[in-house]
Image 1 (tube, rainbow, N blue to C red):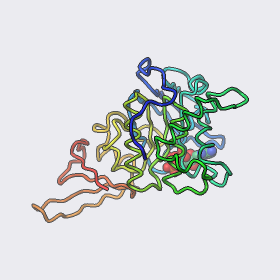
Image 2 (cartoon, protein in one colour):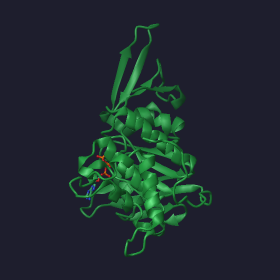
Image 3 (cartoon, protein in one colour):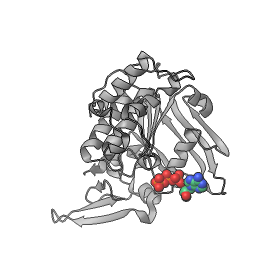
Image 4 (tube, helix red, strand yellow):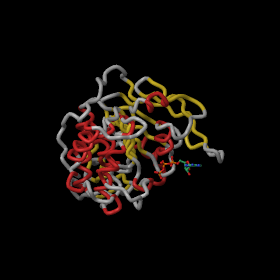
Length: 300
Ligand SMILES: Nc1ncnc2c1ncn2[C@@H]1O[C@H](COP(=O)(O)OP(=O)(O)OP(=O)(O)O)[C@@H](O)[C@H]1O
């Protein structure tokens, strides 16, 4: 992936007017079957940051994304995006969404470049006739994720990592100032993960707002400034170094988290590994339950 930080074809407007990129206040989401997936959730995601959204399966991560995207309504509480109500922000095309792979119909007969052009729909009129600027944005986005050579391929023919790149390119083409990424690292190799992280860092430097749900605990301290720990409500949020403590992680992941202690035989020391399997988080020898993140080391 070409991870250079380049201006987009249609650069975003200045991003400084609202410091809270996403603000969620006491949000409760109850599905039609009566199941409350999210209760009284509150947190903010500042602009120019990457925030990790971590929690077990079923903790409400996708529900939260759906609420921010206006796909489900909050029955109580409030969500604002760059200071605006969700509906208004969506109308202004402020939010781009990179879905989980499972949420996409990969048999749908569509080319890579068509998927990326979908990111431009909000910029077009009702007839959806692409202008030169739309084609330029698609070209640039494909280039930026290293998928230009595959633009004429059917999406069903792509590997897991390539599929992620295509949907990232769609978000880039949309030029959303807020980007939501649902499990961007699932099913991708280490090299693609590193390239995606590099791309996200570039977007952060442009002042965009990113909320990234991930199971890769090990990579969170590496690239996320902040973290939101979720289990049907927000258990903790704030700078990663303050929230990513063993106590908070254990509260969030409960019995799902594997906690392995390796005896290193070096100075009689040991290494604690906290893992939900994909990318483990290593805690140094003798780490205390409240160890802040600067004591944590990550390794793949
Ligand atoms: N449309 C729906 N109707 C009823 N319940 C739902 C619906 N969608 C999700 N749920 C339930 O809400 C809870 C939260 O689901 P959600 O998909 O938000 O979790 P998640 O944290 O994204 O999980 P995963 O990590 O597996 O993607 C789950 O118990 C799920 O069964």
